Length: 365
Image (cartoon, rainbow, N blue to C red):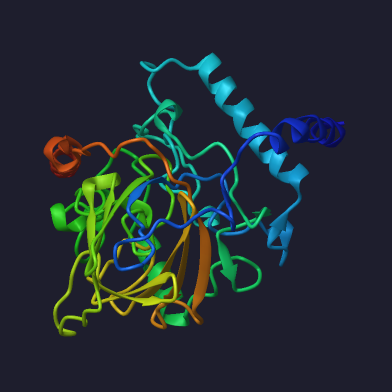
């Protein structure tokens, strides 16, 4: 019954969907150019999309959605937003677990449990309103290679490291459980917390590279000169500067977002980034990460592609592409570290739990 209902819904929505402008790369739009004749990538972009990074397994090796499937996804999101607005107010507390951390697919799931104070409620999320299309074809995923549209297998050493990390992590049960574990604790100091939690770089690789869509704050601003390209990211105010025609800095120098150099291949700007810190913004990646990006003007939009190479983490390279729709909207200032009271409160809470645990142990003796 539910399947027939969804089928009818998709058929009804398809007519509206196909008549409505969606994110699409148009071949015949004029390309703005600089005085030297290079494509001018300058502009503001909103990269939010319902298309996931990792392809849902139900699609297998199929890169494309039918228009009806795309319409169904869009309609489901519209109904979800409408239902959310009908039952939740802005000032209501978030549900247990809050919103999932980032939209990287099966690697993340919303969690709940004792002591979980939640996060933003759904009012504040903005993950887009439709799936993107390239050359009129709707995509099932951002990842295009491997053919199944999913991140490749992890190396054996990475699997072992993740297993050991899980053993050192537990949910918040209201106790200082880490006092019973040998080695550094998860809340010993600011450096024990993740760099996004410390407001140093944006979560989910939104600042990149690669630059991926997340749950909100998906705006980008590009300013281009003949020798440089600056990409301002709304989330955590990251600003990447690409040196066009430059050379990489020495291997021993490391930067939060890596070191980016670019060159033109026809009308496509290719950007290579290396020299990352030990924990880049890309989930799981290591300091050995190399990212190759491709920026191609499509009218008012950009076609953005990337290839990931990190043999320390993945058994093979992987690639993806998606559309960056142009927008007249501005990129506003993002203040994270200035008001990052949560990080200090996490550490204060950990100290209180440790005191309670030690006091209880002393009383029991």
